[in-house]
Amino acid sequence: MITAGVDEVGRGCLAGPVVSAAVILKTTVNLKLLKDSKKLSFKKRGEIARHIKLHSTYAIGIASVEEILKLNILQAALLSMKRAVKKLTINPELVLIDGNFAPKGLTNFKTIINGDEKIKSISAASIVAKVFRDQLMIKLSEKFNNYAWESNFGYGTKAHLEGLKKFGITSHHRKGFKPVHKILSN
Image 1 (tube, rainbow, N blue to C red):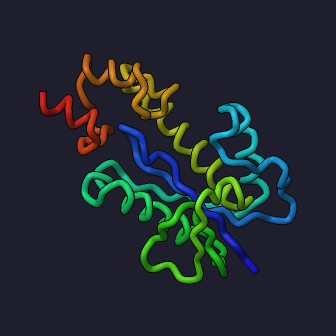
Image 2 (image 1 turned 90 degrees about the vertical axis):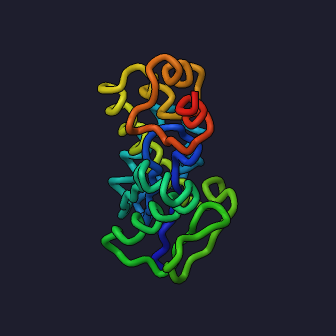
């Protein structure tokens, strides 16, 4: 049975899109490398992501900051998941999704709470999505260097919040998220 694992990253960020990956593992992948992306160092994630890409069929789905504001973060995350699945070049017979929500319109899926810790294809999706999003935020930090995105990737760290207070918001900030909204209101 062709199975795809799906996971998203960036739901809790104050800036940047939400990104999902859908991954169908090939038999040549080293399963021992696959863990929840949060349990791997930045460097190790990058190395493992390269391995996964060589030994799988994968696709990335993105929901923009505008879509997050329009839909809400959960619906935007589900939209990014759906986009990732639809972009796969192989049609999966079963889609395993991290969490307890699934995008509308998917058939033959199963949601799995903590799936990134339990299911290798979801772990792989978690790693691929995290590395993709981290690289995107590092690239954005070159132009918007007042928010420390190269190290916090858009999460609400002290450096990011200080940057927001001192330099204001950018078009990449999620204006509906409390810390950003608070600064807008002042």
